[in-house]
Length: 497
Image (cartoon, helix red, strand yellow):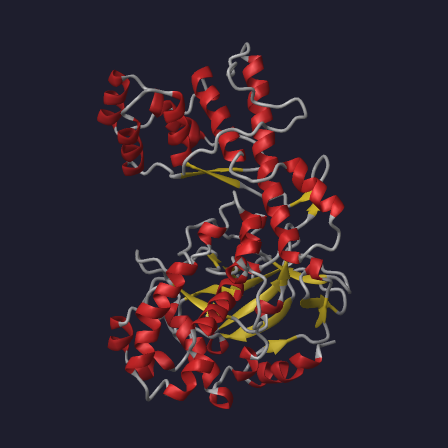
């Protein structure tokens, strides 16, 4: 079973060396809650079965497109198109402009032209994300700066490659955002080897590669053993580029592989590196009629929405619905601002600077274990050190141990209250909106689940700390109640960020 609009694409895929088991794998439209267009098992699929293979030459990257060679390697680097995503975005724009002359014409025609990601939201819709970290992570201003300073200047320098009459249709800022969103939502990080299978001089990365955009996994596949997820959590370059050490992977668009949807805890297939091709292999038994899921690395709803324009809404342990992988971020400057409100100390800025110089976190991540990160506790203790203790910490180049004494506990309680106050609405408000406004716009609906997930973590962490404080003998603040009688945190003065 295949969708009519994919028939030409599947024919192109197979005629260019791609192999797919069409007796086992089909494509259909699922409900939007299940990802929309995706892959389905047409019969029972056993574990370790190869579903399809993609020749490396069929992936679209700056290594396979002809544009960098035509532009010239030296000029490519002079325009800094070898850094970040700008080069691949320009390659995709150029290939798209070639229409029938592009090797990837049939593939590009399958990619979305509109996105539900916040990058394309109106200001009114973005207000629904106030308090979350989604908006500040969009990177829209940085992306547009790259377009004007790097990409468009490169385009203007070569009218032979980018005819002026094609600029408005194929090389506009709007088109740049569309191609960037395609990379963000569908790209893979593919281990770098020569297209003909030879090593291109880079050391092979034997660990599993994480996709730059989609966070789908690409692993080494050993056919002599069972398929095994050997992926690691590593720091991938951000979408506006990483100026640090060059990675031994290429950001690549991978035909067929990017048709698979993803959902928390549902992965049953994975993409593996081999010398001359990539293989999508089942990682468990898949029953006929079931959707074939790749993985987005079980991301929180804030990242799912930012990258892909959807959220996971699943039953949560205990009660309620949301994403079990949700997290909430607390910035170090909020800890500092809260400390400044509570203390007359004038040395806190110096200590924060030292903390960052020593490699301390500038953002702390709370998860559904409702535990305060040790680094956040350590920073809070650092702010309270006496002058002598502060000097010793500097001499040792070592921050204090993350001991949760009553003084630290009290400050963190207020930090959490101030963090909750950054949201314009309460948990109760959001739950009422969901009840009273059925059929609300999709953007608003998804934004509510993002902020609800974050507030749930903050409220539950706060409640756990209050309980811990009582167990210590009532060591929490008497001046400011941690919890209101209805179980929700009281609004406090909004801290400066």
